[in-house]
Length: 455
Image (cartoon, rainbow, N blue to C red; front, side, top):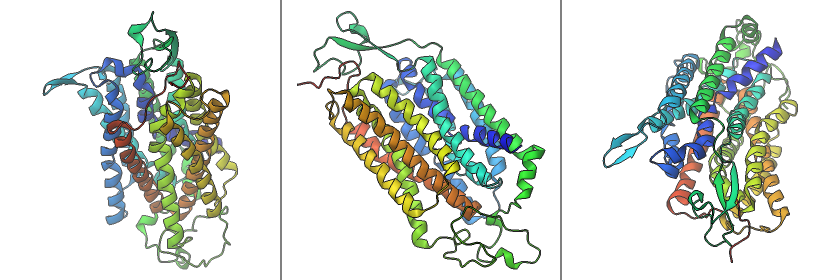
């Protein structure tokens, strides 16, 4: 039954960001059929940041009205909204509406906002809910969260989204990509391959994934075997008690949750270093943990993904697809490693963060040099950019999981703040990169069919 609970936790985690991740991977297919065209990614970036009103409300409720808000009804609501919104999206995504002097995809944008609210709010509700289960299931949840990006990417790969054929420019002038031939020898141009199935089928798949998430959540709440997992740990919502009072001093209290994997001595009396959670960490250490959490999520969720095509396409279409696919695989792999190597050392966390940031700096440098990055004429350049992307995602994903496990040990409210800081870091990263990429145009795209640097 423990394996059954692990599967449910993984399926529950997949539903956290599968809708918005699915929207992103489907963009190359739908942009040609809507009035916004390739401006849609910019609109989507702003919509996702507006959706942070959901996490803000949940966080403020936990801060000023502790114990009033139960995350379970919220999760039921947002997952149901996700099922309905993705179902409607399948039939309405290409419908347009005249607003002002132009046509706009009102249904697509409105439903994207609802899905963004669902996914953003999951960061501050799904994690605190996992506090009700034993600690080992949190890492499984993170594996599912990583799969929420990999699964839609694999389905889109089967669909044929973004698959490019390089054709003779003179014979296929009508299919040329923007900026694809100017400056190069002009012998080849990129032509996107038709999809194997429609966007409607893909969005119905996303709706099915949200239904699976809802079913997993129902079983995590109601299945007798999982219910025993709840009761065996004596779950206590620390937002409903005064944290500064040692629970072990109360003769009628339940046995506090055991944390055998902590690198601290167990005992009935543990000196509190701060008023946060169980007081395991000092204020300085907590600030460090949350700063690292915000920084890592800014890099992995916003800053580097916004320049992925600029960093990879100059090395060719194969390098781009390998980088996107293998980096998506690296996320759940990092979570899987953390399940067996749950190291909570803050020193290791700092080392991994610096290492991942260094690889991220190389990626950013190659994006800035596009369309003429280093080693563009050598296979080594393509191999380096792919390996760099994989190590970047692998190291920082491991850091995110370890921080989640650390904060899980600190209690329910710590996981609420964990989700809030994740969203804050992602928002700051997106708001930083949006003007650089979409407004000022500081990055220039490479050509997947002509890897030679223009002279």
